[in-house]
Image 1 (cartoon, one colour):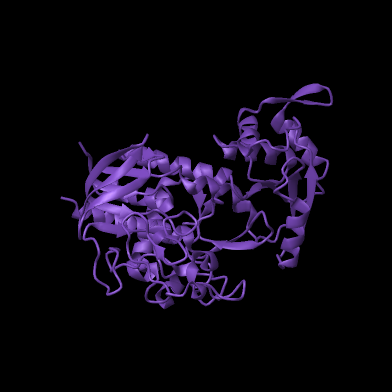
Image 2 (cartoon, rainbow, N blue to C red):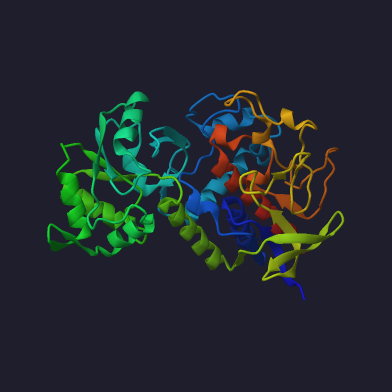
Length: 424
């Protein structure tokens, strides 16, 4: 027998999680299935709405002000500014560790590569690192963490023209963790304030870390660390270090795997659990029944194809990177429902000859009607009870625009809410 729900969300990224939460908040019985674990653990934890226009102008001060001027087929134009605001309000409600909701303006945050990124929402732990702050900063690297080079980051920030003096130093983390130690190992050690051996004696790790940083500190009023400062209560760890160092302490978002991404994942899954959403990860959708209306999908589990039926479906499987959009030498396609994906017949037209040119593939995806239902090449709705959300959508270049998280949250919210309201 089929597993039944009012709304079935396919995909476990930010769009899928937001869709499921929005639908559940509308009173629907919601089930979420995903082919793999949430991709949030690979994300920086910064949440963009819109950093640059489709023409590359920016960084933008007010992302909401720029949305009405985006191309007509952009997902933000489909859902509208009001829905974007409502979706971000829901995000703010379920992520109490985040900041930025007090203003429409983007904040400028340094990243682990030394760039400055416009973002609309950011973890509280990075707030003392905003690039618009004129206070000088010291950045701390760790010898065993080769993917964060503090002197390199400081040099790039200086070259970018930040309004403060910044320098970077590299220290040995107390306890001499191996070079391949997971970031969660650092976080757990700091969470528990475990003891480490320093100069032949046992010491609490927070105090030992503060002492090693103090030896490099030259009075800078703020000190930035790679994002490893705890998972259970990072605010407590920052406060303890700040007190011992007499300086504001902040984190710099890292690449994957990302502790801020894991913290965000925890917050969203806690909200889904509270809302009563059923979740099954590691189970890909491998087929469906229906013509013009999806009756049920088949989820692969241990070699068996398990039927899952719902009145309404949300497709939130990701874009080209996440394989929610796929391609071969002949065509570009959406693999779950085979929704139409517009693309040139000649695959050499899918990309620009210049490395940083205007690549068509960056905007590949499913196009929809105003209710986010996928449409074919003649703009006819393909499935009356399917809505698409997140980077499976076409018509925008999230990497160039710095809009990926915002589009996922806004379209996920709109798709989930609409699906729940139409469920029988």
